[in-house]
Image 1: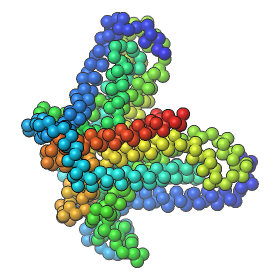
Image 2: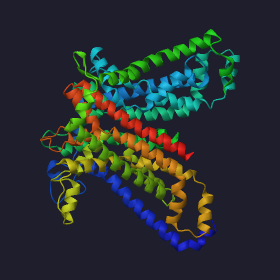
Image 3: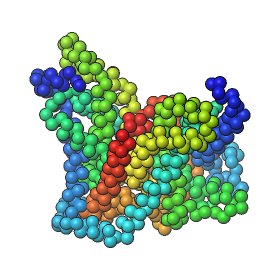
Image 4: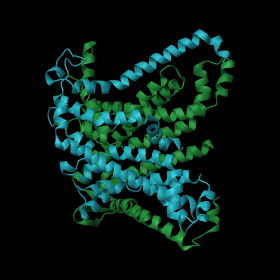
Length: 281
Length: 299
């Protein structure tokens, strides 16, 4: 840009100012994580000492060792993983299948059914949690994986999102497969699913993050500690009277660090998946 | 329009079988985990009932009337509104602010973008624990810092008013990155030619922002604001973790969802909890309708 030269110095000053504002903001935003990690690595005597030490005098790993050696804590992880993985696979698959049917076929009551699915999109989960809980009590699903997972296996948003994306797939591809003698199931699995891979991945990430972070349903549906998901298990680090911050920060770190690592590896996909609902607008 | 759709209306058995095999389980599942529960909540809001005896007496609107006379409900409602207003306001403004700065493409801007986005991907419980430590009265970093520069300590989580402020801080911090990303999409979609023309005319950055960027971002701003409002109305985890169940309980802050939770799963007053859930739904629907209306006017 030639025109930029005339603003030379002023522009440079602007850029420097923006740089400083962004750098300071980033430091403030990232500081809680930094403080979490250094606290987790200090012994109690150092955590509560004034003046504060910023970095630990020497690495103190007992808090982490205690948690990693704690079978309950590992169980929370396992439970969260099972719930999020199974829930994501089922809801993504059901969205793909139903999205395909709604995008490419005609059948009685189609618009009516689709409108109903759309209409419930806006209803907050908290507005039907009580009956879901009562079903679970009646069907003896309290403290079971089935109980934890069943409310998330069908997603209104997922069906809607996949349908929108599949409408872009040309019908010729389906007809060509038909002429080649492929059954509809085969067409669905071998042609439609691969073609929808990128929207399926974005949806799956969105569903996984939602399921992993879900709090109120696990809180309601589980009583025994061995069925707690990580989110629920972590609340136990709040002491009734006095908090053990060293242990609490180690627990928080074990909840946070894996997520950050996964995020940094799959940054593009995750940003797309997380902001999914926004991008479609 | 789809050619398949036009040609066939259940013409062959294979297609009918395929559609039914997918639709039947989906719709039955949908009925069980969504429609029927919503219906029961609605119907249940007119009954007096608990977990054991099922629907008891029909009480008409009494659950609603009682709620509106109930101090706890009133507090929960106004807390939810305060939380929603302030969290939405700050997170939308800051989201736009950072999207605007990041979009200037200064060196390292993609790193800043990643850092600002990180809180979005985390879950609320560990995040709240970390902030509770930062907010600690005695040894928390923030209070130590305040004292270090000669200011008095703040009781961040010891009484309801400050607890609300603290929860808002955490919630804003966590969602700025999300709003930033959405605004970023909008900013990138604004054609460069607008800016170049304005720069040639010698317009100042603030004027360019106000006269070009902001009006062109209006649809996105509306969307982000409405999404934030709806999400914030449903707030629960932050208040549960940071203000409920601690010793004394003097700092407990009720919001609509936590009040629904306490009524239903604490006191088993399913009727009044259902009524409160319906009130939450109505508020969400009103916000959604306003958005539809405004979005239509845009077009």
